[in-house]
Length: 591
Image (cartoon, rainbow, N blue to C red; front, side, top):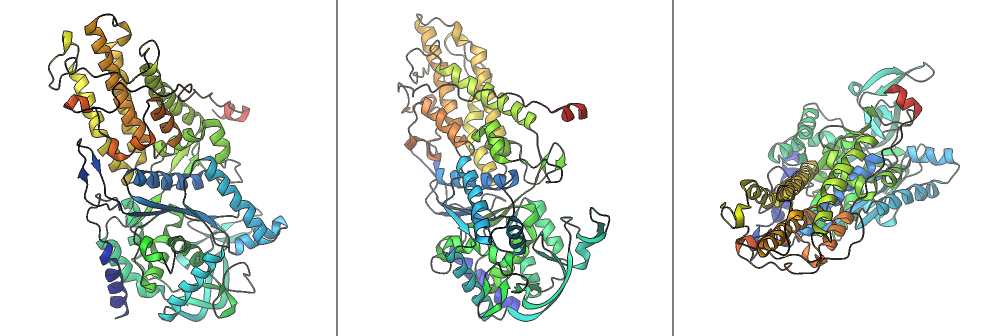
């Protein structure tokens, strides 16, 4: 009876925000797409709420933290381009025994320690153009109030009881483990220890009286949710992982620690001898950002979480169970990404190979780093961070291919008037027949088709958390456009000949139109470079939304607002070529 009532609450709560159109398997719901006057597509205004995990402040940020933030950022920017009202929250997780111990080792009080490290995350996100709209700190007073309110809701519903927890606990992971999740190992001194089989971190046996959450009561409701909502967890392999976990019984979960062991955290309401479990505290941050409890209904129904695979259990089992118990809707989607290795090895302090994102951004540039992470990052498998590979990719796709195309089309030698040239329908007819002098060829029409189809392809991949495929599609079209110019060698045409001049202008018009499409589509991934490209083309900020992706209107016989318009100022190289990193002596020997 309890399960049926809980799940009924879920259905009733979500009934008002059932999507009218859902991109298949994407977890992204939008109102029906409407064509604009020139045949392009726009979407009606609605709400979108994207979150990153709040990052633990026991150490400085690394490349994995930035990867989560860049994924959420491109999704936020993409939805804004589509005319959707979007909210983007991130922040820092500042409570727990690990923080308490780290602060003690640093000789600082916990709040001072947390403020310093939280500031490092803010600084990184500002430098890397992460456009969050809210930054949550779990030490904020507004968050404390949300945690206390959420605890009260769970307690009133009978989902929390006083009990005794006895079992394994990992301080490093802030996680309780069952005997099947623990194995034998040795520490650096050769002493036998128990470790988490998943993380490899040391675990300790603990027994204490605290508060327990009736997690066991929600296993069937969670199974039903995942069975009836295929896009709830993406990519699909991670949904299958969670379903596999749910084959086993779920033990009730300890949701507090004795205050004598853990002072740095939110006290349990009405019981100052207990501290709220750090993961319950941290997960509520999403509700804090949504305005819980006063304003939460408006935003919470649109929530999507971006997380790393290492915290899947907390977000796909604990968090949905807490929400079901509180009678709140479950997230629209949990978007999971894998980890980054470094030249084939797992990042670790002991190996000294932790990638510092600010240093990487100085080498690769801010947008270069963003591009590499999204271009190479594959959500359902671990990815390798290798500086030399990054430099090669960026030099090839941004400096040479895209930058070269822009430089060609705006060079004074080809475009001395520095304008968006006029299109000649006679030179480039709508049908596949040859133009003046038989200059158009079938490959030209194939190129137009690929560019025209590109926005739909990119939207599909952006929404399905496959930004690497979206950027791959853009890069392929850029190569086709370069091939179009190379094929027709406009630098050989005689500007004094009316026929040649008409054909030259048409080549440049088609190429600049292609570049405009690429610039608009690249905005979520590389906003600074996209702005540089579009500004050079003379495209105003008001002409850069998804609804402006109307490609080559003149080829359809429609008016083009850019035709004859002056180009923007030349601000130098689009993306200067990067120097290859110098290998250390040890690297050289190993290779």
